[in-house]
Structures are given as structure tokens and as C-alpha cells.
Image (tube, rainbow over all chains, first blue to last red; front, side, top):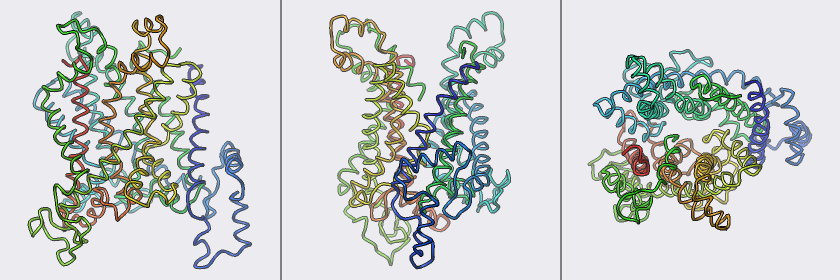
Length: 309
Length: 307
């Protein structure tokens, strides 16, 4: 187990380096000048421009810039935005908001999705099964920004059940409830379908027949044996989805005016603010890799046949 | 998704039934023909493809003809779906919008399937160091969230790509494909690894077949099924992703006609003119639905476990 974790952690290093380099190269290729509009409606004074370029290493070729960035990154320094604010401070105020949103969305999709999946998996072919099958198809095919806009209007503006937009920089649980449901809606459909298929497959497995044959109640056989093994693909999906939700929150954040990383990243790309873009994405990649490691470790807990030794 | 990965090994088992020519493909086609969902999705997709190639078959109105005095008129006031804020005929815009979406969906799928398929087959068949390198490179691209990566990539592409409609669609496809290929490569790799130890592959090697022949005539036909299923479903996903990027204002740009652009413009007026939102969303959802249903039907046909 210990060696497995260490090996996985070592494998992360090239992936993190590769991903930051990739983003760095793309930002390097971004059109436009970070100095544009910096000094009002006139070009910046040459002295300021020279100092600015020197400070942000803009005169160096790409590999040198990247090497300087990584050596700072290793020391925990994510650089400064072009406004002179440390990127780390920006991320510290914005990441918790997006993380809260994504975690709420994950909880929403996991709890309801697994419950619905189990319910439809046990009573396969019934009315509820067909209803869920059709409604998940509908949810999957409607793009998230339409779901977001329409639910904001009906549940927020018309019925007044939820706040229409987020107004504080540290939004409450209640304010994020509707955005989280919108964000998690697509994955909810996937989770419930995945849970259903996986459970149906395991209900036909030999070990379940054995469990029933040796006298376990059906409830116990399913709850204790089938459910745990069926969770594996679902957990895999949810783990992968956490990273996707952090990134995909950009649309939800735009609709509900949430001050998370989405809007920040979007503005940074527009302003060609390299340090902000690379820093934000690097943190996303690291979170994604750790969540996946966690998921792989969970496999061993869920299915005793899988071992990491 | 993961359900599809387990498909192949069973389907290649010899099919002891009557006629000799029952290959995997003809077997799948046989069960596909009986599936009403397959026919429904095929009809839906054919209509959208026809719409994309010959929009003039469906409407004679120019989607860029602005009748400002009838701006925001309701469905039925002279036009089928009403007019949007610019006075454009929404029906014509919905018809002409199919081209951008289908084009992006098809181009992205071709790119991801060919890049991901090639790399997946290579790393699955070669194994060892080549596999390790290609898998780690795939991990790098896989770890970057699709939407964020696509945004950065789109903004960093040169203006050359904005010069005409086809290049605009190609630009969006490239952005989606750059980060989308690793999932196809992973799928193909695991599928090839399942097929590789089979006896007929060993037999072909023993008979002296070259690696390229083994891959082409033995491994590929028996391992490609999950890729086909996932590619079909993803095509719907790419169409939705294109609309999302256009919604954010960085996918296709204004003179281009796209469902995503129209939906984005209509969300503002949701309160007073819901029809402006409803029709482009309906078309977009139906197109996505068509490909998802087709993928589901193909998977059921290729997976003998569900029979």
C-alpha cells in the first residue's frame, strides 16, 4: 500500500510538469499584449514597460520563462498577476467558493443518483425505471446553460424559492444550492444510469446467488454484497467528475454571478495574464490527480479482490 | 462509458449458428434492425445531416435577413417560430444553425477517433516503454479540464481561423480534440490489450504475419466496437460543447449562425420572449439526443450480454 502510494505520487510529477508546460505554451501563444490599456489611453512610458517586462520575465524565450516559473512553483510561489497581486491570494479567496459549489454538486449527484440508480436497478423494467430512463435522456441532451438559465428564471425569479444570483464574495449554502443542482444535473443523470447498469450486472453474479442461497435476506444480499461491488464504476465516474465540475463551473458561475475561479480564469485569459491562468489550472490539475488517487485507493475498500500491494 | 469497455472479448467468440458469414458486424446489424430506437435516432440524425448539407431544402429565408420592424414577433405572426431581437427568422436560423453544430461534432469525432484510436492501438499493441510514454502524455492532456483547456486553446489560436465559417468550425474542433483524444486512446488501449492475448492473434503471428497485418486484420476489427459506441455518444457531447463555447462567446462568432450563439442571445430575454430560447434549444437537444440514442442502440447490438 505504502509503496503503491509513493509510486503513484512519483507518477504525478511528470503529469503536473507536462500539464503546466502545455498551459504555459498556450498562454505564451495568446495574442495581445499584457501592457495594453495598462496606462490609460496612451502607451506606457518606456521605463515602466521595460521594468514590467523584466519583472514578469517577458523578454525571455519560452523555455527560460517556464524554467523560472517552475522553480518558483516548487517553492510554493505562484507568481503575481499583472496587477501586482500574488496569484496565491487570488486563488485563496476564489478556490473555496468553486470547491464548495463543486462539492455540493457532487453530494447532490452522488446521493440522489445512487439512490435512484439502486431503486431502478432493483425494479428493472417498471414504470419508475422507464420514467428515470427518459428523464435522464432529456437532462443529458439539454445543455447546462439552458438548464441554468431556465431554472434561474422559474425557481429564482418566478417562484422565489432560491436567490436569483449570488451577491456576496463568500456565498452561503443556501445561495449555492440552485447553482449546485444545475451544475450536478448532467452528472446526476450519468450517475443514476451507471449505478443502475452496474447493479443489474452484479445482481446476476454468482456470489449474489450464493449469498441468497445461504439464507441471507434479499435486502442484506443486495445492500451488503451487490451494492459495494456496483459502486466501483460509479466512484470512478464521480472522482473523474470532480475535476470536470471544478472546470465546468465556469458556465454556472457566469449564469449565477458566483465569484469563483471560472470568471477569474476567463478574465485572466482575456487580459493575457499568464501567471493567473497557469496557477489556476495547475491547482485544478493537482486536485484532479489527488482525487483520482483517492478513488483508486477506495477500490480496495469496496472490493476485497482488488489489492494495491 | 465503462459499460462499453467490457464488450469486446465476448463478441468475438465463434457464433456456432447456421450461416458461416455471420461476422460481428452483420450480427450487430441483425439486432440493430429490430431496434425501434435505432430507427428513430437514425431518422433524427439523417434529418439534421440533410439540414446541415442542404439548408435550402427546408427554408427559403436567409437566416441573416433582419426585419427589424418585426423584431421579437411571436411564433405564427408571419413566421413559424417567430423572430429574434435582430428580426431574424428563428426557423431559418434553427435550420442553418445545424451546419455549424454537425460540422463541429463530426470534425471533432474524426480527429479524436483517429488520434486517440491510433495512439491507443499503438500503446496497447506495443506495450512496454512506448505504452508508458504514450499513457503519461495522454494523462497530461486528460488532467486538464476539457472546457477550460478548450477556452485557452481557442483564444491562443491565430486569427487565420476566423476568416471563414469552415475554419471557424475547424478551430473549435481542434480545441475540443486536443483535450478529447486521451479518453479515446485509453478506451482503445484497454480494448486492444483484451484482444491481443487471444489465440487467433498468436496463430497469425506464428504463421509469420507482419505486425501491421496483425493489427489491421485481426486486432482492429475485434477491438474497435467500444470506440464506435463511445465516439457516437461523444459526437452528441461535442455538439453540446460547441454550443457551450459559443455561449461563453469564444466558440463561433456572431456572423456565424449557430444554436449556441442564438441560445446565448435569447437567455437575456427569457422573461418576455421565451420562444427565442425554446426553438434553438429544442433543435440542439434533439441533435444531441439523436447521437446519444444511436450510441445506446449500437452498444446494445454489440453487447451480447443484454440479449
